[in-house]
Length: 201
Ligand SMILES: C[S@@+](CC[C@H](N)C(=O)[O-])C[C@H]1O[C@@H](n2cnc3c(N)ncnc32)[C@H](O)[C@@H]1O
Image 1 (tube, protein in one colour):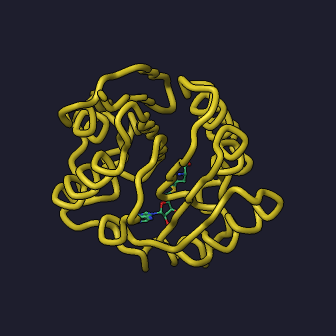
Image 2 (image 1 turned 45 degrees about the vertical axis):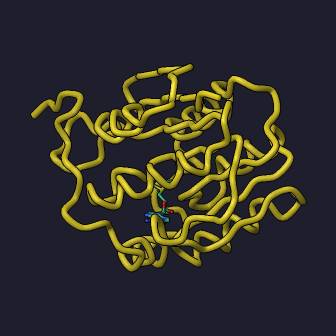
């Protein structure tokens, strides 16, 4: 089966924190993010796609073990990275121990969005785990927290072969449809899709 862009559907219920906890109990780095070339390349492309040299305040939901967090830190005055699993938060904190401008917290989204605004939001391999309703809530919440002229980066895996929901096209389309955002970068390759959208002033 070869899937086309847009084929995947949102799961009926948002994938639970317990599910992700189970993955971390089985393996410290469940997706091999620290060692897999495709993911390391994805992070490098994500950081290279940031239109601005520097940002004041970055929010990174679903940070996992902090691989991308470490790369975002030198470009930002402050980074708030969150994940719904303590085991991920602990590893991400360890990964950024030497970086005073990064804070890592536990948060389940969309319920626990931060009470703050950001000029950069980076969301990677997270949106397709949410039900359609939670995806809507999270995207609304993220856009509401994105400052005018700020950038939101979405970067998601494309599963072309399997029937699962893990395909970035639909969730990126849902983000791009939000009013007041203008696309600045679009990248697609055999592994992932990336969009950088700017909130119009
Ligand atoms: C596949 S990893 C993505 C890691 C990294 N962002 C990347 O792009 O490679 C997804 C992470 O999001 C976390 N996560 C999944 N659903 C979440 C939710 N609703 N709220 C907060 N974190 C969530 C998981 O625990 C996991 O660590």
